[in-house]
Length: 106
Ligand code: TYC
Image (cartoon, rainbow, N blue to C red; front, side, top):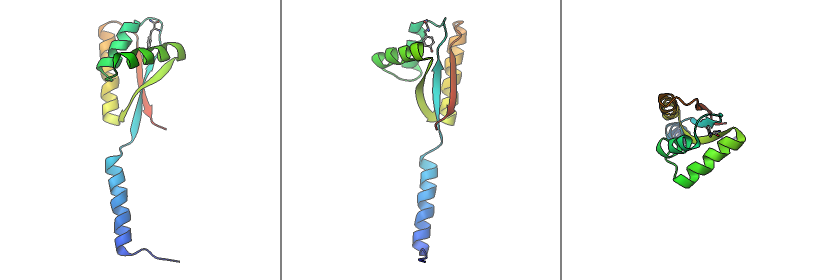
């Protein structure tokens, strides 16, 4: 059996620490379909909150409309929480029932 040198072990620790600091756990932010939120409002949310261009926003809105839900973005936890809160605040201000949730990525 071979044994690691101190340098190799320190290298492993450095790699582990680097991995931890550079790759936080990621969360999917999902938009859910409903029968009342206007399509144009969902498109505007995708453009303003999730920084999609207009073509991608329209496509994603239709994915939600026809399939029930879709991932609007993938973010570290605190950013995902902010996106969800922003979407819900904007939707409720306009009286729309739009649902936005987050879940761990895999
Ligand atoms: N189904 C809605 C309609 O027909 C549009 C819609 C799309 C609502 C996406 C929510 O996340 C949503 N007006």
